[in-house]
Image 1 (cartoon, rainbow, N blue to C red):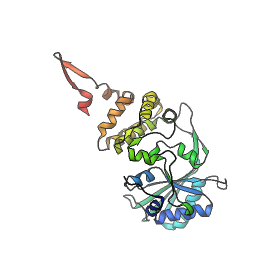
Image 2: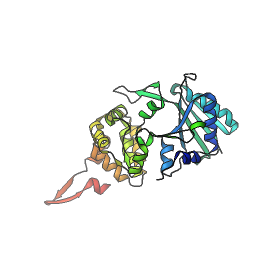
Image 3: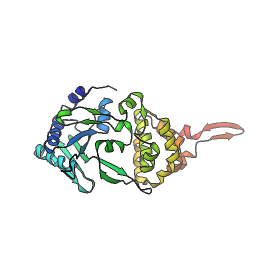
Image 4: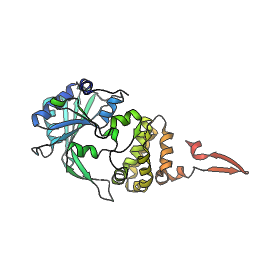
Length: 285
């Protein structure tokens, strides 16, 4: 991991795509930030092709600021890019072909734009009720502190890091924790519990004690998550360097009993002829 100053972050973002986003934001009078995994991976020295941008609508001129900035960016890029708009969600995706930046295996750079928002949840669903919000609101709703950092792309503050929850410190310390109350975070969106374990496994981080306790208290909430989403997270854990770490955490917090009971029940020591035998759970891992 490397720590960077704002000036050094500006140099890292000194790419055509980010300067064009900056120009579009300034022309529309919108504040724009690159957020989430892209920012996290800068400090982990792990270049990413997953660029997410949050756009703050300060004066309500653009009711869907993420879409507005994406449309202007597409205009600036011309035939080099395609635009997909998702009006119901207020988001837009710009794919840049052979553009500067971190291109993926298909030679594309993908930038997703969303307006800053705040979210509230109903007990029986992980689908939030969404309202326009500030950057602070948007960072509050992020799953973990290491994913809640943002870097400003506007020309006057280009490269400025906004890190209200100490995500950078948690990266240094190797800790996964939620920005706000973990009980609320996991109850609102139980899929975050699997994501918590996945990130800890993938990055070889430790789950914060308070956050882990909240995993135990809220494990039953995983029942409202579809099997397809659970399978997706389990597959990502299996693709990490040491997937057994993830499955041990799943067992410790009580999630494994709910999603793979056949594996969980193996966590016992057999006795044969009066002698203790191996623990089949750990042996299987």
